[in-house]
Each structure stands twice: as structure tokens, then as C-alpha cells.
Amino acid sequence: MQKDLIENAVGVVSIIIRNLELGINDNNGNGGPQILQIPGGCSPATRNQQLPISNMQNNIVELQDLSKFYQMGGTTVKALRDVSMTVRSGEMVAVMGPSGSGKSTMLNMLGCLDRPTRGRYLLDGNDVSGLEDNRLSEVRCSKIGFIFQSYNLIPQLTVVENIEVPLFYGGAPESTSRERAVELAELVGLGKRLSHLPVQLSGGERQRVGIARSMANNPLLLLADEPTGNLDSKTGADILSLLHDLHNHGATLIVVTHDKNVGGQCQRIFQMSDGCLTNNAKNHYIQG
Image 1 (cartoon, rainbow, N blue to C red):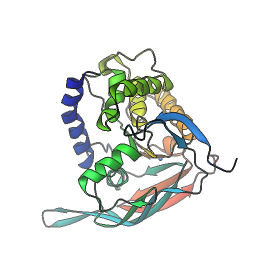
Image 2 (cartoon, rainbow, N blue to C red):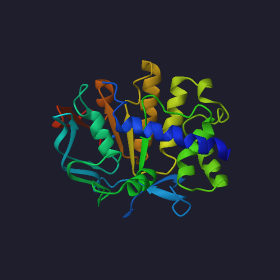
Image 3 (tube, rainbow, N blue to C red):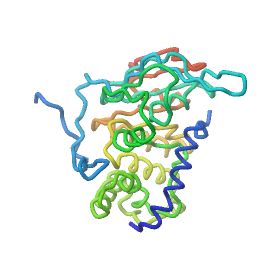
């Protein structure tokens, strides 16, 4: 990959992360474990590890009375209020609610983009609630993959280079990161689009790049923010099908959405209102 382009992209990615922190992306989931054969990792030491498929016993996410308050002038905004929830390894769940319900703040917490005012967030059994910025960055790189509604691809980079960006941050050698990126592009059906720029792709193809990029470091958790929000119904259905394929191969997904059709295809729905979880319903139409 062209190093100068990637290094120039650092500023772009920083803006993307900062926008998410500010909530700009909110526009209103035999005796041992089975193995998903998708090698990857955040650093040379962890790449080529295999992703264990859940035995549905381990909690990947555990929130314990989590709250987030913001000061706006003399007013305290209670964006999240005493939220408790668990997501087991291998689950696909939805977080739903109208604009202003706290979905964006929840996404920031789950993605380690912000710290709670009080309460605990256990990610894969480790308390990440009070980690410093550099440690939170390491956690985001190694354990979490993000899928954005607006794709957030870097315009100057090709399909394969966009997929490589998380590997670049993780310090992976360029030769092996290219191999990994090509493998992921082929996995999402873009093997013949490797050298295309984002402007040359359809919306559905851009989202496929985003999904491939989210998997680059073989994360424990995938966070999808309105993944079909910018797509027509047919393309959205194709993207949902791809997410289901990942889930069926062991991925743990949390989908943040206001679309009942999307939420209805997840195993459980966490309903939010005014910063609180008001309901945690099992979807009986979905197996698992």
C-alpha cells in the first residue's frame, strides 16, 4: 500500500472517530469451540489466529448500571441512565429506539469511544470503563469492528487499501496485510473490485467494503450503526444477508437501528427510551 496515502488518511480517520464521539453519525449486534477459518489480528503477534465460535455461554459484553451524563451550560443531560445488559458470544442483537433515545451514546460506550460517568463495562470479561485513551485505542483496534451507515471510506484509497487501514494501525507488515485485505474483499464479493475507488462503487458495494474493513483485525465484537440506512430495500436485504452469514460463522454483532425490519432479524431486541433500556425481548421468529 502507498504509505503516504495511508499516513495522510490518519487525519481523516481521526475526524471519523471524533464525529462518532460527538454523535454525528446518529441519524434518528467436540468438547472445544468450533473455529471460523478467517485468519487475522491487530498486530503481527496476533494475526493468523482463528476466531472461536461461541458455545453461547461466555458474555462478550456486560454493562452494569452504566450511566453517561453531559454538561450543557447549567444543564445536566442524562444520555444513559443505569443501563444493564449482556450480550453472549455469537449473538446477533439489536439496539432500537427513536432519535434522542440514547442509541448513539450507547454505541460510543460499546465501541470504547467514550467513558461512562458511572457504572462498569466488561468487554470479554475485562473492565474497560476507566481505561486511558491509548489503552482504549488498543481495545478498539484489537477487539471491535465498526460498520457505519455512511460507510466512512477514505476517498483516495482503493477497495483493498481501505480494508487495510485497520491493519496499518495495528502494525501488520504490508505484505501480509495486503493478503488479508484481498481475502476479505473476496469474502464479501468484491474480489473483482480491488482497485476501484469508493466513488466508483455502488452504495451496497461501499458497505461491503466497510464490512470487510470491520473484520480486518478479527474482532470479538462487530458494531453496526444503521448498516442499511443509506441503502434501497433490495441492497439493504443483501447487506443483512451478509451480516447473517458472518453471524452464522460465529461473529458477535450488535446492530443499532430504528428500522423494525432490521431489528426483527436479530435474536434479541434491546429497546431504548430517554437513555434507559425499557425492554429486552427475545425474537421468537429467529433461531438461537
